[in-house]
Amino acid sequence: MIGKVGKFFGEVRTELQKATWPWDPKERGFKKFKQLTDSTVVVLIATVLLGAYVALSDFFLLYLMRALTVGV
Image (cartoon, rainbow, N blue to C red; front, side):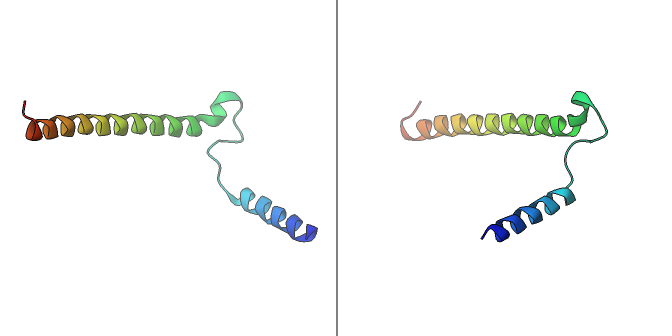
């Protein structure tokens, strides 16, 4: 049992070493994470824009359905 767990973690370590990470290991300080922070900003902006689109669509459909069923 312990041998299988050790083998598993050894394989995990090997696979993680093969992965490409979103930062440059040669850089120092905050510059090291430039790609990571840029990608995070893109995701946050996309999330806000998608949320605004869904909210505006919801309000538009709400008023449309209210106008069709109740009248203005």
